[in-house]
Every structure is written in structure tokens, then in C-alpha cells.
Image 1: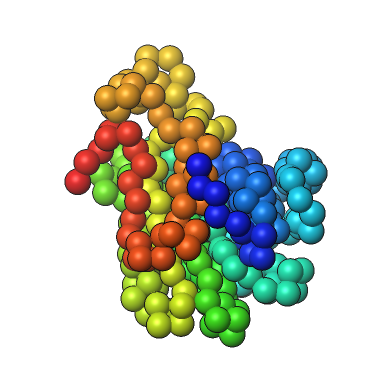
Image 2 (image 1 turned 90 degrees about the horizontal axis):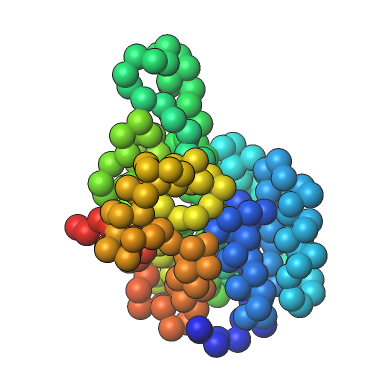
Length: 255
């Protein structure tokens, strides 16, 4: 466990009312950070997360991350709440089926594809843009983007998801090269399947056993494992990993 003191740092974690975001909020708060818990629809869940966090000064903010203007304003509201922003974790995402087998009419398919790209890539890009403006003025900061192994291996039936996560990895690398001279580091983590509510339907029965068997460890990641990776990437020890994409898939996909 990393024991870095984050007591003078603040963090905005998108999609933190559940799953990986919730675990990340807890682990950063345990390290001493003040945390802004973001939600889209789950206000009660978000308030429950904040109430459970150690420390004080945490906040709850709502925004639709598929709207880049709302994503940008979310960052501004977090800065207004805390006075500054040390860490942005772009974790919010959607995983919506949209196969190209003709089962969806083109307009329906396009709507799901566009929503997937907007939530998983365009929103995080907008949030990153605005965070960088604030971080430049305060002397630096850290952005961690939650990508996916799907960016490498492809996602049948989820083409927008794979494309968006590939774009998120590339966005992280390009931003890292651009803003490093401003003492801003940008990182990405690429998990495989994680034991979350979003993934749970894919982890049931024989199909779920097959998913787990993709890893020689015969399981999928826990939310705590991903959160610990994010904690590391947000820590001073990880500064020189800026621009990297950390695989976290239990050797289920190697490239």
C-alpha cells in the first residue's frame, strides 16, 4: 500500500458514486485528500459515499459527462468548492451494446455509438482541458484516465467502447507530451473486466466463467485493485510514468 500523504491535495473523481470511482474516492480520502464525488443520476449513492469517507471537506457534484460543456463546468465547480484541483480522475463511462448485426436500426445504433464516445472520450477530454487551465495556474497537477484493455483487443458488439477507450489512451499520451513542461502529468490505466455492477451481467454463468478463465489467475480485477493503481499514478512516485498506459488485466490480454 502506498503511504504518500495526500493531505494537501484535492481530487475530482468522475463516476464515483459506485464501482471503481467509489473505491478510488475512498483510497484517496484515506490518504488524506479532499474528494469531490461526482454522479450523474445516483444522488443518494453519492451522498452515501461522501458520508462514508474518512476526513472532512469532501463534496458531491452532479454532471452529465456525455455533455462536454457540463464536464467542463464540473471542473470549475470542483475548483470553486476546493479552491484548487490537484487530481482529476476521469472514470465515468458507459458500456452499452450496439452490435453491427442489423438488430439495431442505423439511427438507433448511431445514437448509442455517439453517446458512448461522448461519455467515454469527449467528456473526459473536456474535463481534462479545463483541469489543465486551473493546474497551470497553480503550478501543476495530475490527470488519470481510466481506459480499458478493449482499446487494444477490440470489443465485439461494443465498437464505440473500444474506439473511445483507444482514443482516451491516445489523449492521455498526447496531453502528457503537451503539458509536462507545466508540471502536469497525465496517465492512463487499462483494466480488463472488473467486478462491478456494470460488468456483472457479463460475469454470470458459463459465460462469466469463460471471462474469468481469460486470465491465468482465473478471476477478474477487484475495484480496490484498480483504485490502488490510480492512487499510485496520482502519487509523486509516478511522475516519470507520465504518458504511460498501465495494463491491469491479469495477463488476460498481452500486447
